[in-house]
Length: 98
Image 1 (cartoon, one colour):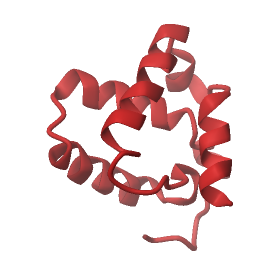
Image 2 (cartoon, one colour):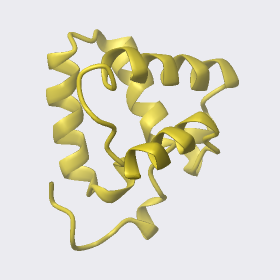
Image 3 (tube, one colour):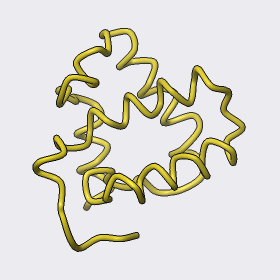
């Protein structure tokens, strides 16, 4: 169920925050395609909103290396996934430390 929710949100994402607002329609489309090509083909979808920022950044670094992403695609993917994360003030302060 969570995986279907994440995919549905990713398909119709409305950007959150200042960084996300910088993504054009083309970048959103390209980011979604990159996500499906480099992330979703190897493992299930994870909801980035439930991870604390430091934990999320650690995983992004590891997975960028695993997927052999260069700087520009890694940046686009990170900015795209940030559109799925709530603004800092609404992120969980405790809880998920995956």
